[in-house]
Length: 432
Image (tube, rainbow, N blue to C red):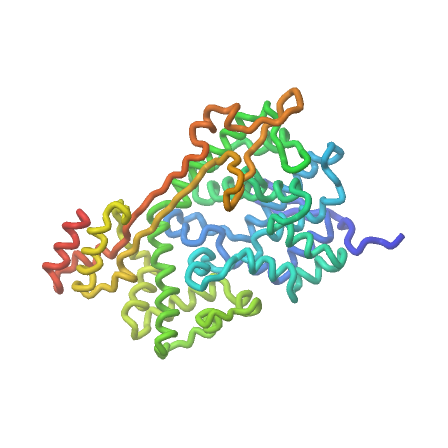
């Protein structure tokens, strides 16, 4: 019998972690994956994008979070060992997918993706399956192992139980980011009794179920997710920074398309401006590189690009008012016209931003993204959907909350040296 390429490390490695106390690595495979350059790059990409502008502690990275998801998954699999429905031969593929699930994230991921029409999930796939150090390590396990890991991350893996550990309505990914983001932002909302949840998780044929005795810990988890979305992830100041960031990318791309000559060539972005960014181009990008360009674009001739970069770097953010363009269409059209008269390009300085979240959803067959509900394992061995047992969860089930805000540069509107009358009309319309 041939010895497997990767076995156990001679001595367990541990990472000190502020959320889980210790992250334990016993498998050579996991240790090798952590050491790849594609995974190490995640140290240079923040987990929460522009949130550090609002919560100054939110400087943690995708690297921190990825290790955390791996650790929670490792603990879940320790609970599952020897239980019916769990196949121990799935252990390494599950741990590898947990570790690598976010490896395709780029600098300020969501803004970057929006402007350059890319997708971090597709980059993750390319990193796992392409000509990378990550792929070399995975391929040493077996010729089909990298594909299996990619399938788990893409939620197309044949064994749905494995996928649900990393991606479902209660999974290792969410359990890590809620606690980690709460810790680093300094808020108290994201805390719940994870140890209790891990102890009552049970593997079923197609998904992880929760013993009914653990229902209250799950209620706590769902409420903490709800609070984190509205108090942290959708914080209007963070969204203001995100709006400006998106507009910087948009302006740079638009200038390039117009043949504008940059004082400092944005070499790292050219292939993305052309819509032809390769994996190598993408892996060269991180937040340090991106911030370098924002720094030097403060000296560009183009007034809009220059101003947006100054605002982003020095936290001179846009102000906001509640505004629903569907209900205030007339105001929206009038404002656009007034902004042009005030010499402010509304494409860049008048922005509606909408946030929406569905904290928990029950099963709705045929929907584009079918959300597998959380099931409770009853004492009689039957499964019961969570919102049928929990009044707390039933109260928020299937209820999508949406919030619209209008962002604009109040400092400019208050400067009455030019376009005094027009600016006054704008301020009156916005009630500021």
